[in-house]
Image (cartoon, rainbow, N blue to C red; front, side, top):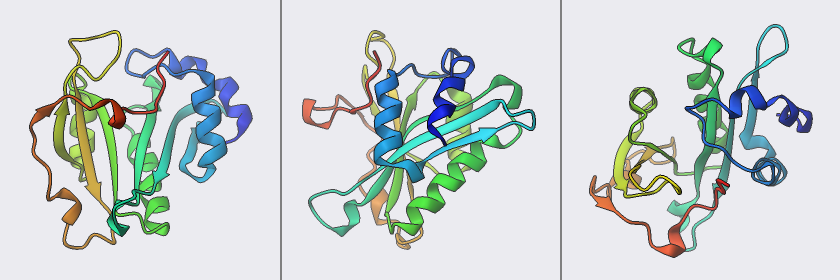
Length: 178
């Protein structure tokens, strides 16, 4: 991902399956985690998809180092061709190199195509986040997680409750929507 790729986003960002973020969101992620931002470019040079993520270090113990997929989208012209899987697998590989324990992500419960994709990639449903998406109180989110190579015993899935919860204010995502 290069800074000038941000000028090619409009066709992807306004897709109905893509969450809308401010430009500052993309700039912050590109500046802080440049190795976790990847663009898929079509043969004619158009942006076919992108992924933005971050790597976070928890305070409790060494098993808290993990990655979070903040944004993933693929152009409608390139869906169902494996582009999203390639982006997700690359993201996981980059986190494996950092010795992260798991990758997590949130997605709209109504996005069944994405849910199936993530399940096929080895992600497990951890819990449902009630009224997660701002401006749309009826829309909940799936909180999904995939253990990485260092987690041989899959300890990071041990607390998966599959229950519905409301995130406390201190656990809210920093992924600005407006």
